[in-house]
Image (cartoon, rainbow, N blue to C red; front, top):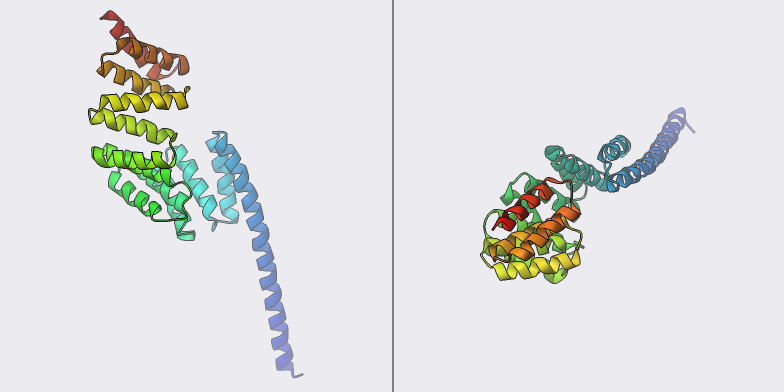
Length: 254
């Protein structure tokens, strides 16, 4: 073998060794990143968003091209009300995995929080085009909320009903449909859906607050006071409870 061919062979072997080491190193970093991501997710579930963010950012230094990690970062920043950063990470998740429907739905919810209704609607409709999306009722309810805020109540009702066809006890859709019926002046229907909702979620104070307002509109003051007392019982130290107490006292004066 000539010296040239020998040198070339050595170079190829060295290159293969370097590539093999680099590949192995990436694999190790990926596993370490996934472990940190899992830890961050646990903190997120516990509501400890600062600790979650700390672990997720460590994971990003090891393996940034993880769509699930980028989605987790988006959710955590959203929980900390850093909406621009949340949007940035949801978009990064979609750059890595364009068909990742949950990240697209989450991105839409950022625009709901920013009150950019039309942009939110665009993303939710794109989500519904993905036939593999496992929870389309969530995107439908989000569309219902966007149209409700645009005061397009017929479309709001349509999407909330579609969501409830898929998940009859989905709380966001039940409450949203109740609020939509109130806005449309369909008080009996609002009362019916909200009463059904409180049966499904008897510890959700906000539903009782909504229902109390419906009872006031329909002049059923005893039920309104009972609903406000339920708000106070379930969320005793909240601003909503203080308002409920004032509202109940106003009713009792008449």
